[in-house]
Amino acid sequence: MSSLLIKNGTVVTATDHYQADIFVQDEQVQAIGKNLDYSADRTLDAHGCYVIPGGIDPHTHMELPFMGTYASDTFYSGTLAGLHGGTTSIIDFAIQSHGKSLNHAVDSWHEKADGHAVGDYAFHCAVTDFNDDTKKEIPSIINECGINSFKIFMAYKGALMVDDGQIFQLMEELVEHGGIMTTHAENGDMVEQLVNRFLAEGKTAPKYHVLSRPPECEAEASGRVIDLANQTGSALYIVHMTCEEALQRVKAATLRNQKVHAETCIQYLTLDESLYFQEGFEGAKVVMSPPLRKEKDQEALWAGIRQNLVHTVATDHCPFCMDQKAMGIDNFSKIPNGMPGVEHRLELMYSKGVLEGRISLNKFVETTSTAAAKIFGLFPRKGTIAVGSDADIVIFDPEVKHTISVDTHHMNCDYSAYEGWELTGKCRTTILRGKVVVDEGKADVEEGYGQYLSRGPFNPHY
Ligand code: URP
Ligand code: ZN
Ligand code: ZN
Image (cartoon, rainbow, N blue to C red; front, top):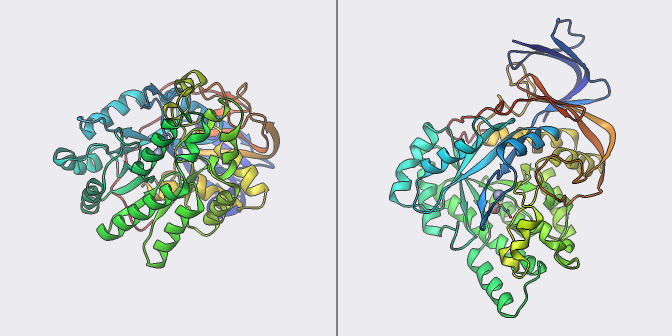
């Protein structure tokens, strides 16, 4: 029963911004106020710092078996890296294997995470093989496994992709039982045609990855899944949106009074497609799907955030080391898709979003924490600083300058797409359920400290 007093900081939530002290006991916030006078086991001085809710990354892939290899971060290393960068909770994807049940997927993700993660974690359940047996599992996945969000892939044909009939039926089940559909929206057939054409022409370099996944491919699938959701009445969350054309489909949906949740990722706001056109194999570092886009798409996404069309900023953390990326040295379509990111999301959002005048401090908190908590049923336990909430708190020093580098990051990946980037603003202290887990770059947390976050049925009113 340890206690903690955080003094003299500026508390920032998705809605508020004020000077206060915070008293924490039994893993939760017990009091917030001016000049609090509690005696505590430990006192932290947050003078000159923002005190913000711990980040929630709603899109990660720890130890994902994918494209013939595994994402290189474990739940231990990946959540530890997250804690260094102020992310105290993640939502990872438990992905069904063909021929196996959803429960099997959830069990195997628990095996990877339980007793190992150091940050808190929840799961989305990715449905890759929807059939009558899968259908029967939906109520128990929601009510017994504590998972209300289901993912489908409209791409990765022959591996993870499902067809429109499966999407439609799954949506109907989610409406009935209280789930939300999350979607990787790319037209897998269009991708397949373009990939095969480039390969037949001997075009194998990383740049053909972006050329085989044009914005039309993402926009078409986004529009299609939005229409399917409108028809079935399903709640919908489109993951890793990258481009203006896809965002236009969301805008169009709002005009007919349909609510669509959209996520983008920090890399789509900060990096662009020119990286694919570098010499040699360098572009493989940013091979991910959908691919990076143009600067005009970044500006559209930032505008979408300001206009409440884009709700969350995730990472799609899915790291592969360069020897893994080399699986596609002679064929871009074999480069494992994904990049590391879980560690630097908050700091990049602050530097590029708040300091460069694109978003407010409140929006920074909303997109990195609060909105994910609300959409996925973790609020108000997570995603805010309030009496009774879990004491997941970051003391963020807005003055500290630092440089991102593979030499100092904690992710298990031998490169950073942000190598040498100079940022202002750093997570000084990360607190998870009242425990100081990282302070001034030093971690103090035992393997397995992270807890599984069981969630109730989807609540459409948050
Ligand atoms: O390239 C990506 N995004 N890799 C991870 C799997 C996915 O599509 O989210
Ligand atoms: Zn995806
Ligand atoms: Zn993903």
